[in-house]
Image (cartoon, rainbow over all chains, first blue to last red; front, side, top):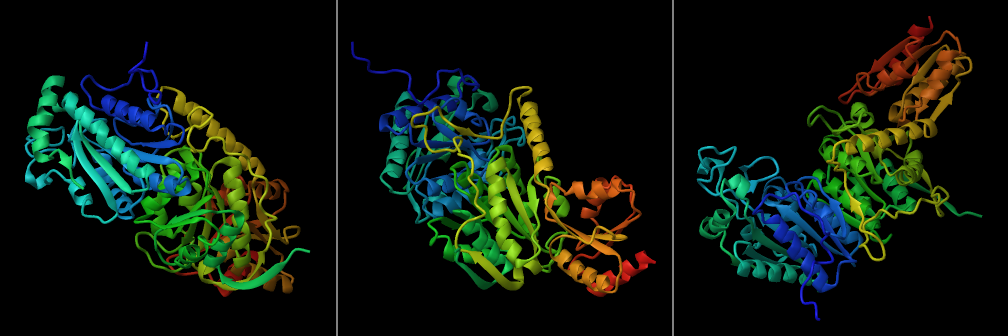
Length: 241
Length: 356
């Protein structure tokens, strides 16, 4: 019998620590499937963030490094420059990439580093208990915006659109995990971002809208609905550059 | 016969050239006075050596690039001056926690805050007491001449690789800007056979995946890791103390100074010796591990002598001298900071008052 689907080689067969309905597990698996399909498991180097995905290297089955909060793209820049034959990617949340690491993000992008970035936007800080993120929607209640975010705390930061202005950036797409079709689309975009690096195209980033039922205070199903009805209105899905 | 050539260099250039000759192939940094000639030298000569130079967008980014380069197996280095070194502390702690070899150069200037750009030695505590968070140490080396600034880079990279530890060169603005002849090596006698690096990130071809991290979440794991670090620090304390000493045999006053300050003190000592004054000098070369051995020996000798610590700070190494001598001998101090440097005349006056 022909085997048409199985557990990705690049994903360890272990349980994750993620909450029910969290998007990280899906995103991890998509990356593992892409790495397998591109045949790059033995030359890929992943950079795990600080945040809920801090131990992503316990789930992926290939070389990985940690990075201090926000510094993933500085670490990745150096690894890629030292080992250009390797395929180097960062996996970062919204706080990591768009708040504490904004500087590292913008300048790695502006240098046009030949890197792949998977940017998980769930509009909240998960690991630390649900505080306001740079991407938190106006009106969204969090631990640090108990009455809902208002404009005095800033508007939701559209870092992908900002990065698209930079000459060094070659590919940016925003996708979502709220439906099977969107998950398949996310995998296609992630694959494109890795293929770009293999082809030497340059800085490529996929922003993935991802549910956080626990800190949104929603059931997993309602969280998916909120991605579709609220998040994707503020952060439109589609090719940005 | 080995070919040697003598060239005039300033300290910042000598550090850069020494690093390149020692095998450094990755440099990232951010401009700050008084060390700017160092990255400029790297920008010009690193590509010729086949290495990578990156001007980073910040000190934070520069040190985290060093983290990445070291994780990928390169002999990596960054440099800065005091305020910039404060910014690098986050990355230095991570480098220590991930057991990565790296070299960090601090061409010290006056502080606190923005301070000024004049030479100072007021970052001694930060360098020797783990400037970032956590129980860790750097090996800290203090050159006192332009030649030694060049030579010490071989030691720095060797020790970094040998112990998988960040090594700091603690220089100052005077040393960085001072021009002296340097005998550059055409070969690499200082580069020893360094340990293989099976832990680096190269892609997991033919082996299990490598993970570079400083994160130990499971209960007890971090304590175990810290104990392993402490065990290594104990070995370093035993094996790697370095110092230079002069006239200790009959000295009644033993001066203690490092770096630029030791140069000035040495001149004073030589002048006093010419007048048959019984003064000596200990010049620590490793500030961590502090050269306790020589102090312990003197403290145990039963001799009645005094230490006089002289620093371009208000008394930082002073504490290590007291600790190393077990407070068994009197320890006097002379220091200035914020741009002031104890002058030869001040030093001689102070010594004479102690010899009375």
